[in-house]
Image 1 (tube, rainbow, N blue to C red):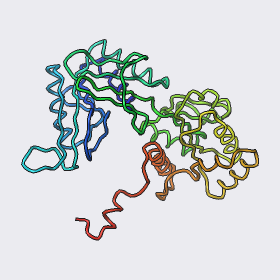
Image 2 (image 1 turned 180 degrees about the horizontal axis):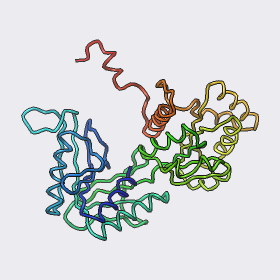
Image 3 (image 1 turned 90 degrees about the vertical axis):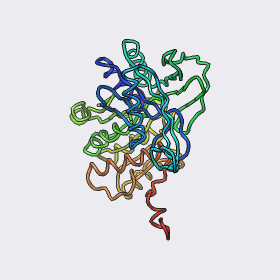
Image 4 (image 1 turned 135 degrees about the horizontal axis):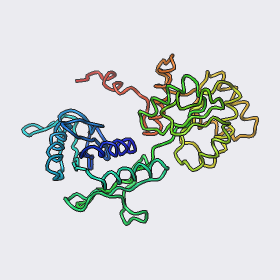
Length: 340
């Protein structure tokens, strides 16, 4: 969600100073990850969250003080549940949050520069000094900073002097087929941090009025659209087409792509999916590639309406991106003989 955060920050900074609160260190069970951010401005207006509850309230109070003084702060959030000391929750962990005021033309330019790099598909390494000076800035392309790679491609380094984070561009979701489910999926996918793109050879369906969330709309054949998407390393694709032949055409192109899709899902009944698989195999595509397709698309939540199906697909996108299981979080306690 980095691009949304810094885009919002760039807009807000044109009117007033804004405090950026960033989670820089965590230990144990906590509600948010390192790199989670929240914006605070005015008399307590907020964008984003670093976890909610008493811990977030503590950070908001600190942010309002920083907004007035300009003096950066490091805020500790104790979620250990330990007795006989001030705590902010009982999750079992601990968080450290850096709270810093951004203001002025330089801050606007920095926030916009971050957005521009991420929007173009390039990472941006942000160096936040953990002292009053110097100011937060982007590292040069040939940066001496070293960071530890995390599972989602994010890179983090924390020392006594600086917090260094390599922000990755948002993953791109190509919705193939601009019908009713695609329209709802675009809304949900944009909310969960995907850069939405739409392809359909019908301009009356694939247009900005129906898809205001889309950064790119391809009212043209799938083959020509994909040629323009070759540079995108993190491409997710959802096939929501209006017919069997469009599935075949899209799979032909997507399975032959130089950079394999991070996710490739296809809507349809099991019967339709098997027919498509049989037809695509006859075209000489390696049968092993069919095992990489999520079809029928989505998680089994009993979805019926286009909106529900969109949620089902979005849940599967999150599962693939974040590495989940799809299992109900309550299952362990419900199956336990003694949940207390």
